[in-house]
Image (cartoon, rainbow, N blue to C red):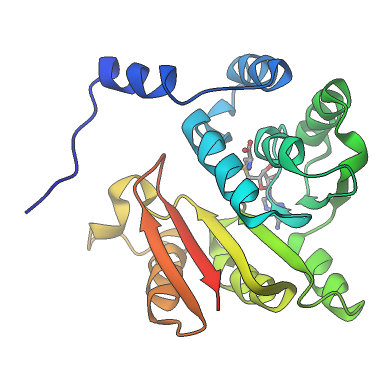
Length: 219
Ligand SMILES: C[S@@+](CC[C@H](N)C(=O)[O-])C[C@H]1O[C@@H](n2cnc3c(N)ncnc32)[C@H](O)[C@@H]1O
């Protein structure tokens, strides 16, 4: 039986009211991003609350973010990391990440975030080439969907046993179940959901939050 409830706007507001415990700079960043044309790229606020909990539970110190945009998810993770914690943050867009840098600075976490402006695959491959495999606690994948399977494999290499990969947009606004759709992004998300589900190297859950978040814990 289907136990998943449908949200009304009142219920969604209730969820937010009982979920958010944002740092003031997180709220300022969400408000600023809401004024931008591409604001929908940002994770939902309740996803931030959830990620914060995950990072705390993992006692994460070294993390990877693929897809920074204006920096909300990286800010959320950085606020949870210890002083010597580090995020390798990957993006290709200077304009959006300049907003991110400003808000990270305001929150005093800029020293924890190593922003790499380059295609994320190049950054991940350079980390692997530098022998950093098995050293990361958490990875968040939220960039170009067609590359999700490649990002997942690189992150599996870079994570320690017991590390967690979170992958955003894995319910893809419901488009996954439309058989008429076979564009590269939709196909890549179908593929990552299938591959992670069948991957015996991880324990996984496809979580109904925001646009869907696939969690894979490396054994
Ligand atoms: C959905 S947004 C990320 C949202 C962000 N996690 C947040 O919470 O606000 C996706 C980002 O991925 C970046 N991106 C797209 N292709 C990329 C690539 N090949 N390598 C690195 N970043 C990429 C885009 O520039 C964009 O900023």
